[in-house]
Image 1: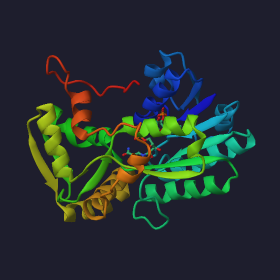
Image 2: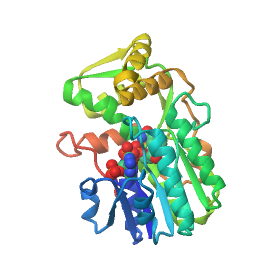
Image 3: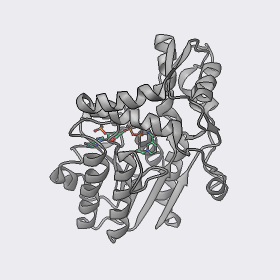
Image 4: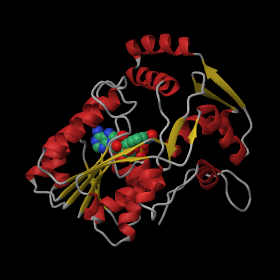
Length: 308
Ligand SMILES: NC(=O)c1ccc[n+]([C@@H]2O[C@H](COP(=O)([O-])OP(=O)(O)OC[C@H]3O[C@@H](n4cnc5c(N)ncnc54)[C@H](OP(=O)(O)O)[C@@H]3O)[C@@H](O)[C@H]2O)c1
């Protein structure tokens, strides 16, 4: 049995679909079983629990041969955030996996995870990576760049629903974006193929696009009309300080926006992609068409689940 913690999320939903299509027995850990309704139809084993609760985590891990952690505590709240989810939640999963003699642990980290990164998410992912590598478990670590599907919701959907969108900062910094459909294929490969044991994979997509370019592609492919606003960098810095007093999740999001506008975010993914030619290289155009344009009548869709 393969446990997918985070199996209800954007990436996790695709991973679960791919594993099930192989006839593998999959269990999903979720805080709220209704969030797994789209998965339960496929006859999955759903376990209710919170990764912050070691007892619930032990229950979920019991009987698993593989654990895939695709949990995400960003932007988060006071109690559920990168510290309590991405670091401590992964700690609970790793400890439970050790106790249960799990054969393989796949950790979803993020490209750029480092102990001195300005975003706490990246520092907490790094801490989880370090713990996993020192755990004695057989492991695989995935470090994807930013997900196209997530950012279509952040940058694109407001164009469809409000006729305008807001880019963080100047929007001129090249950023690598990858589709969760591609990342899910790597996770599937890690779950079924021992060749990825003990490997850390930096996974990126085909293009480095600025946020402004991203929105332009979204507009062109979806047919969305609307204005692109820019949140000025100085307003972001002040906003992050003010928000940190009342809304830590919003403060975290604004700080991430500052990093994405200013830090080196481009990545040449071609070396890893060449090594794994069976994994598709999905473009942003394809993602927007798949999730926001209905092929035959031109109507806009809700994001779809990628099936194998
Ligand atoms: N989004 C990106 O751009 C990006 C980039 C690089 C790496 N990643 C990493 O890729 C993975 C998947 O990201 P995603 O964007 O697909 O995630 P997502 O859609 O935000 O889903 C987050 C998942 O985490 C689970 N989760 C959160 N808090 C939890 C808790 N306290 N207890 C149990 N489960 C909890 C949620 O489950 P329930 O809500 O059902 O409880 C949900 O399934 C994550 O590890 C993320 O850090 C993401």
